Length: 56
Image (cartoon, rainbow, N blue to C red; front, top):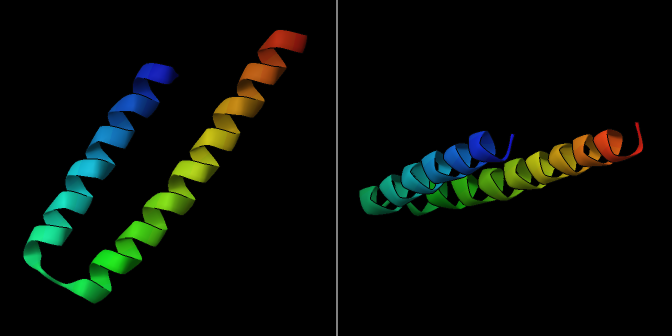
């Protein structure tokens, strides 16, 4: 789980860097918002899975 999320984070970081290099301020801003939301959801999912595993 942690390895997969780390790989996903790396992919997202690479994509956001590419978006910034293309120089499109509007799309890069949207991409940053998407990344923040996505990482938040991913973090919450990972946290809930850990809690379930701990208390199951």
